[in-house]
Amino acid sequence: MKPKEILEEWIRLFNAADAESIADLYHDDAVNHQVANEPVIGKEAIREMFRADFAVPEMVCIPENLFEDGEWAILEWRAPLGLRGCGFFHITDGKIKFQRGYWDKLSFLRQHGLPIPE
Image: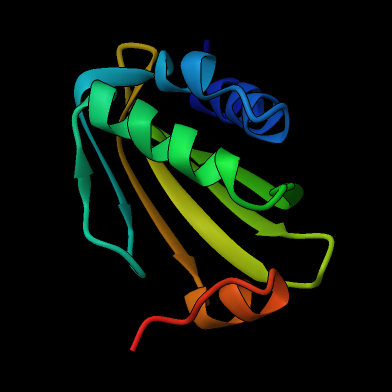
């Protein structure tokens, strides 16, 4: 599959809160770095991250723009409550090798009534 097609599958699995299947889109040694958090390294750690994230509030990714440039897929998204962000996915051999996401964590926590770290 092309990078954009993998990203479309990632969005489908994210919106289904399917931590098991979404993790299978990553290389064993992949890195997921949501810049509001520390990088998560390795497919199993990424799977655990998604399990934990999907257990808190319901999250929905509404794609606004999808781009593909060589081995990169780029996503600009919004959430139903208005939060916006973007993600960059480096895809090699049909799997996500590296992901970086930019979004406002403080706004996310406030919108979902979650505790704000000090």
